[in-house]
Image (cartoon, rainbow, N blue to C red):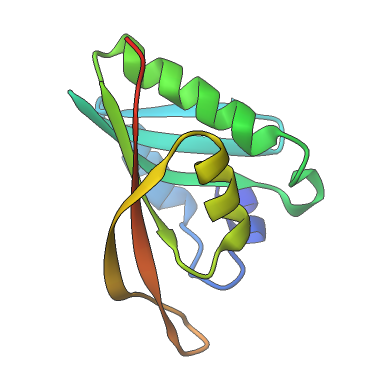
Length: 133
C-alpha cells in the first residue's frame, strides 16, 4: 500500500508502511484492494470516512478507482453506514471527477487545508454521498 500511495500521491507526503499498518490494526478501518490500487475507510456508524484511495498511475482512468469505491461503499453499508464522507484537494480534478461521477456532492470546504512539501496550499473540498441500505 505504501508503494502504491507513493506513486499516486507525488505532490503530497505519501503515507509510510508503518502508518498503513497502524491504520489496518484498528477495527474501525476497512480496506478494499486490487492488484494496483486500494482504498481505506474508517467506519463510525452511521458514517464512513474515506481515508485514502490510491491507484498506480499506469492503471488510472481504467475504472480501478470506481471499483474500489464500490467495494468500500458495500463494506460501509454492511456495517450499517448510511453516508460516506471524504476530503479531496480542490486541485485534484481527476479525483473530483471520480467522486462526482459516483454520487458524491460537495458539502463544505476547508481553506488552505493541504500544505505541499514543495510549497503552496490547496483547499480541501468535503464531499458526501448517501449509501443505499
